[in-house]
Length: 454
Image (cartoon, rainbow, N blue to C red):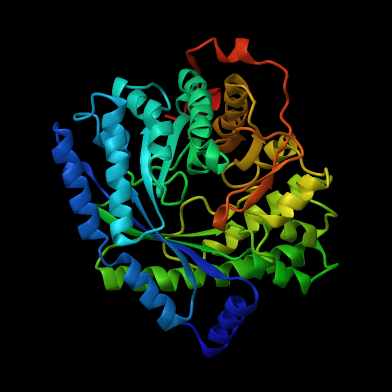
């Protein structure tokens, strides 16, 4: 139970420091929807989602009102559609029909996003999984609430370079198909290495096949709370700094635990995990970059940035893990560019480059996220960026990802506006030296030597 002091403290974090529950995500297994007839499959999917998630949005709104805790998003994740559609789908348009069904179901129940239009191809692609991947540009152009992800590698399997090459083309086509909206389709598409068995957090969300039929997960975020706490210990040594971050992370995660338990009870669905991720928004004061500056950097990208981020990420995890019975997901600090005003400012100041961001991803959660690049960037260059980032995850046994947006018709010196939580971003320069001979080799990069654990 929270005591009266903690209640008052939590209220202050909500009112003044941008504390919120970023999302309640309902995971739904679609394994029992599988059918070899595409029409029956779509009907099964729509009926299950709209039945299981019928009270999700209302429950979230009720909890938010009663507890005074902002719950920003209500979302759904489903079993990877590359598996669910394998029997029924004969063409890319068959898969697109499933995307439209998911989108329709999401609108019916009122959720912000639905994740799971996904393929797991870390070691190889089945013909049906390749069909799904090739359908992504059309699927994201013809839907509004779909999030798509493709798992391209892992420490255990290595990197599927055939799929890495294909995704360079798919990302570019997705950008082309949504160019009237500044290539916004690419903001809903992420590729990963070492994805968790179950990932409830967008854009890489999918409901794992090892999970129960339905599950409730909560993601809580509080960059503003951490920054405010650090303002009180300016000039103190690293021991005080680390203790302050840990204690703050503990308090923030407790809020998520309360919401998760209450949502689970009201919906009659098992509680999965609480994820504490310092996930920024474009709102002023809700920035991971501002935390790094408070730690002592003039701008993100200055010498010491990677060390400061490593410290932050580790202390957030240490504090959060003690506050909940089940902590999981991709806990830690996220560094998306377009969603963090401080990161945007650092790019505009010339302090932050893609190469520095790549170095930072060695110690943060996930990877190169929400980065806008020139629209004329080649497919193989995009694949090369993906390969670099996923190799970091493969070698370091951590989850890494790429969500990159080649903005068709725009180049260096221009900005792109996505709106809402997706924010806005300057177009960042990309190394233009050619890597096509490397990407076109095909095949698979083997798993690293330290993957042999058995």
